[in-house]
Image (cartoon, rainbow, N blue to C red; front, side, top):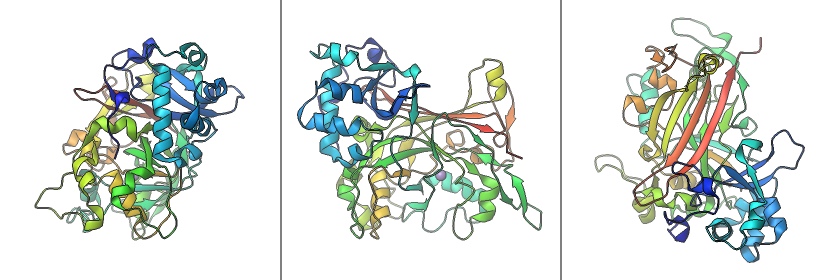
Length: 439
Ligand code: MN
């Protein structure tokens, strides 16, 4: 479990003025990682850290030789064209580099001039996936989402009997995980619509987003060797925003009895910046389970997880329709919630994933499942917001109505952490747009 140190001091300031602007996602207390290059260039992709409105090019920084020792070794790993090796380095390497970068970026740093030469404006970069994602697994850990969607599929018995006993998940496709800014075509598939006797082959008519967070695996575990809950977070590098786009008509027809398949595997978007568990340390909350609900089995229960296993991350979903863009209007906010409402913690998800001996590998991606809070406006999917497509929502700005997503709709996820006594940190955004089906 991460602890607070001088890198979390809310009064710490950077010599880079934009890092000290109130409301920035990337103050010196954050230092999230990505892989990028100058936009439209043929440069090699390399690791970077966000600071204010700039990206610190870690390959350029490594070449200056200003960071030595264990942090210098970690810097070489993080400077590569994927972050897999750096994530494999484990908490010692992550913390050594965090501390060295903090020292290099803080007000009065001796190396300021050399480090400043390694900055690239964020508006001038293009990203790619931060890791080679070997495997991608998506959990299902919001009880509010499970109940809301369960009511659409099984009105008589919305919550499945296993939900309160284990973090449910399905194995997804890593090949169709894409970086924020990637647009995709509305998928085709089989759907059996209410009232019809046979399925049809059709472009999706019930296209949805899912507001989720992702977490990246650090050091993996050997096949056959489960990770105990007390050690789970040593295997988690950090978190990002994740949109698990879903074709509800295809999904609800195909998913019995083996779970999601084509309804989920056409596109999954993630934000470019991975916020480390170290940076998230000030925003931990106790994991609580009401006394009248099933308590976790012993292997999913542990003191630190009880004390601080949950995380308070504020999240919003905005829809920007073609009309919003044409008229220059602000995208419409359609949901606002927090990650703190999840029924299971990311440590419990990781332990559950490995309990049978499944091996996780550095750079693997896990999704948390849709994040829906307790009230209707906190729902993290449009199928919930529109009550299964029966009650259209109205988009602020244009007044357009939506039961599901239309062609030209861009969905923008945002996340940030904020509390008294800590510096606000953010995740940036995760964006993707629906293009018309290919006929
Ligand atoms: Mn999902």
